[in-house]
Length: 328
Image 1 (cartoon, rainbow, N blue to C red):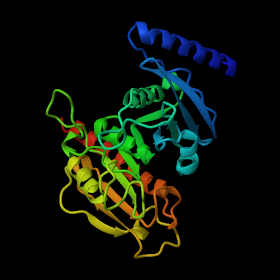
Image 2 (cartoon, one colour):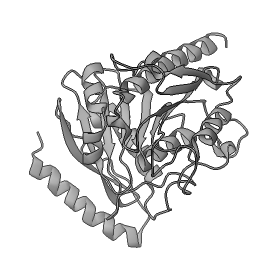
Image 3 (cartoon, rainbow, N blue to C red):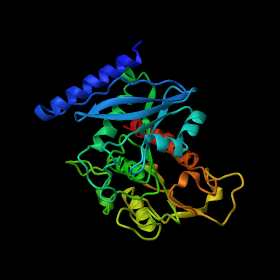
Image 4 (tube, one colour):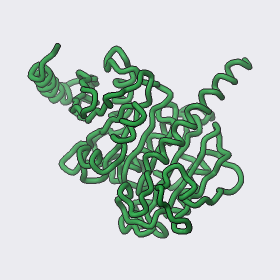
């Protein structure tokens, strides 16, 4: 078994090589050594476009074979450690037996290139990082994890939420559903989403849950500072890109899967489009809270809410694909 020092030396040599290659030859990628310890978070390193990138990998003690993989992206100027402490994905993973990966943004002020709205373009290719990371972890020979390639979900907070939405928009063939917390649709034009280069065929429709705080000073609910869309416009954009029919159904959050046992009716609600392309659903829930919605005062469990739809959609989509295959 490789020692921690052995792995560190390999990473260091790879970093030195990457810096040399970056200026003289074509960029290269390297998955690195995927390490994990059941019940703990393990830091791993990889190279994407000749740049060293890192991520935390949480595999629960009761990890289930063939389980889902959840990506959780941190907010602007934060990091994977803070995101892991803030969000509820570790506890949900421990309950359900799936793996969670916490990518680390690059640079002195970590952030994500996540569409037109948020945030400023950078020299780092975060899109390539996310796709390569998914590829490495889903390769059982590399990761030694038995993960379901059809159950890869993108989630995140603030700038990380924008990244989650961006990945679902552009790569719904990889990320089949998304949770966008305290952010909005990643483009100003909804037609940009789901495009396949060189063809008129759209990428698959995807389920999305957007969580917004009515008192959010950073990503305001009813107006914009320029780094987000208003809640109303964002919901319409998600619905348009997923070709949803009819009008959204308004439901009290107390009737939703994430509701607390002592939930009080009449305080907050969700709007959901139930009839969308590929049998996806588009939901937006508004809570009486600020920007950091995971610890909201209403006790609404965002991860349970998202997980319920993620799993419903994965089963429905798999059945749809099977029915389509059988009719050929």
